Length: 78
Image 1 (cartoon, rainbow, N blue to C red):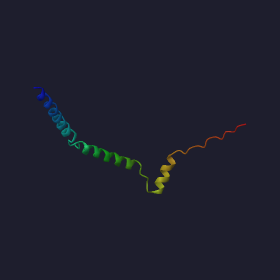
Image 2 (cartoon, rainbow, N blue to C red; image 1 turned 45 degrees about the vertical axis):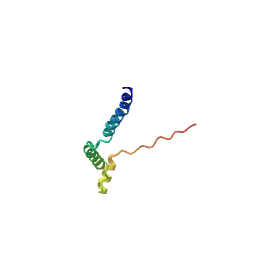
Image 3 (cartoon, helix red, strand yellow; image 1 turned 90 degrees about the vertical axis):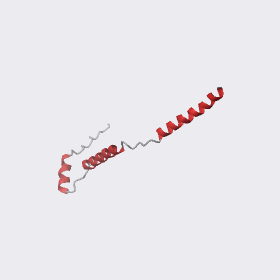
Image 4 (cartoon, rainbow, N blue to C red; image 1 turned 30 degrees about the vertical axis):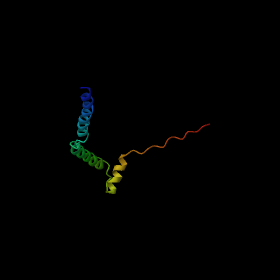
């Protein structure tokens, strides 16, 4: 009976390895379609947000809306 117990240990190890191997090699691409579509929408939105106008008059008008930095006052040490 002791020999049978020692033979069952490797048998359980093989069964466990087979179960783990089938779980590890499962198809994991089920959610990729929705994630890739969301990433494509995000990329399109970022491209639309950062486009530069081709018309120079529009570019000049939009540039005037952005306040320019003021120069820092010069400090003198005395």
